[in-house]
Length: 378
Image 1 (cartoon, rainbow, N blue to C red):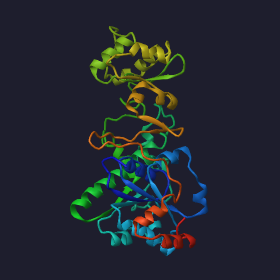
Image 2 (cartoon, one colour):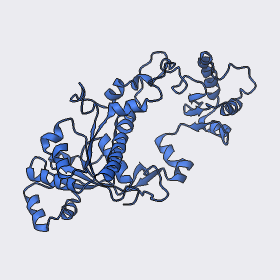
Image 3 (cartoon, rainbow, N blue to C red):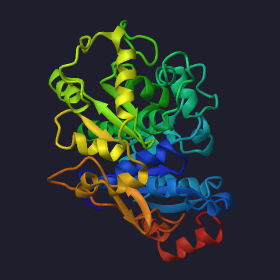
Image 4 (tube, rainbow, N blue to C red):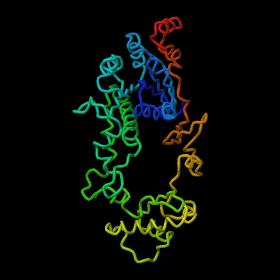
């Protein structure tokens, strides 16, 4: 593996969603991420969907029976060689398995122990079940996204809680912890909570007293110069003409240059201007509008489907979206000129690298065979 995290080893206790996404980010950047899969029939049967196959790329896998003390010993032996461990269990589960922070840091005082949960390790809801939609609901994110006039909030997929406010937060926390541990020799526990991450993403808006009701503000669909418009063919275009110079070009391209219009930032005029501009965009197809705005300095883009995005000339030139073995996926990001990352290997089969990982820990073939025969590893 190449990339800026080459030489970093992370033990990932297999889970769902946000923690695997953090593992993907670390593996993409060159970290040696060793996923500990559970030796259970359910896990062996649960082969990948397209979602899990992409976000679980780049690992090595060892399958371990964590209900056997010898399996727990294998994980702690791995911890002794690692910079970080990450888990996405509910609070208390790792402790019951014998691989919580106390025994892990006892084996490796410089270890960064990353914990990914929705509600966090502390607080009244810490042990309560939940999903992305609940976490973004509690933090004010969900109420902020949706149409004006009291319509239902709109779910932003599970990008804000699970991935942006969850997995990315955990990956950032682990890297911060590793930097600190390499400087001080002391590890620590990273409590990455999706409610914290979702609130963090709301930093520009939480304290703004002038923020109005949903759908009436500059970047939530209220402004006529920043939003999405339907076209004659029932497709969409996105406009972001915030700055005055871009706004002037925007008005020119939609045929409103020289028209007597209210000031750009006259919020009371935005609803009727949105209606007027919307009617104009309905007169041409999306591709016709792309031709009208071609080369214009005005912050315009077509709203593409996932299939169209994969074929877009700009994204294709950058290699932003790639296809391997018939599976479409994002390329590693961000990009580094001195330590470039490359697309990591596909998702491993559970236990695929067990022998190699155990050999690195110093076990010989006979010892590995004994553990396998006893069902300690799969």
